[in-house]
Image (cartoon, rainbow, N blue to C red; front, side, top):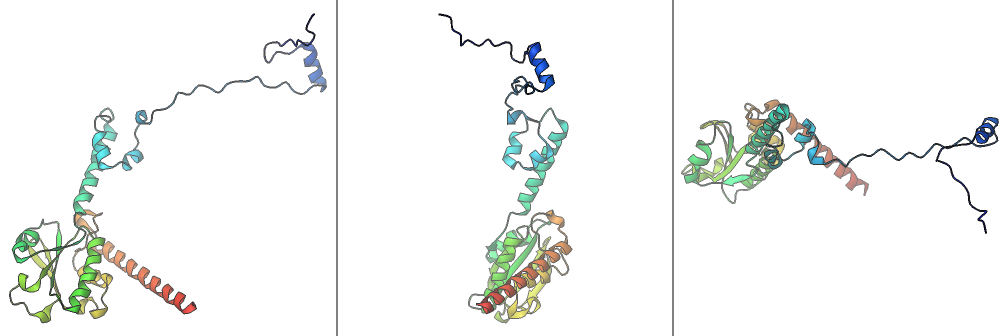
Length: 250
């Protein structure tokens, strides 16, 4: 028995003349667009993509070292890679401190007098049991973290200078290029017993670019350091004021 439910299908998109007439008269809906598969796009390997300046800026020193062979054919990017690698090495070199180094009298020449000419050294002379020494040390510890391009060392006063009177501690000596560039006895120039890391930093930078945050190399701008210290001081004052207001509201 014949299958009367069979429906003949022409090539997709083909229509009869009758259908065309009916569509022109509005009796049939518009002819649908024939199906078109999306164009083939091969998967892109990220390692084979061209390397841009921005891409290189985001690489770590170890990755830049490994890229040397891959960038040989592109002179610009190879030159930029070398420049970027040199910048990272210089920054790492400048930021090699970051804390106060305890030294003895026998270490002084090596750690202070023979320090490289582009390194400023802040020498902290102290004695245990003197409150002012503890107060100034707290300030210097914060500055050492904030300015890792500057070398901070501490030494017991009489180990550095025999018979150095306790009434003169704490004392700060600032060295550069094997010479003393500044001497600060007591806390008076730092604001007395109310001294803060910011007041100490401002005093140290009054005449020379002693503090180096490690981002500007050996030619750090004294004005930029002072401006950064002032901004930090204002932020701290505002934070303290807001804390007092919250306490009063409670």
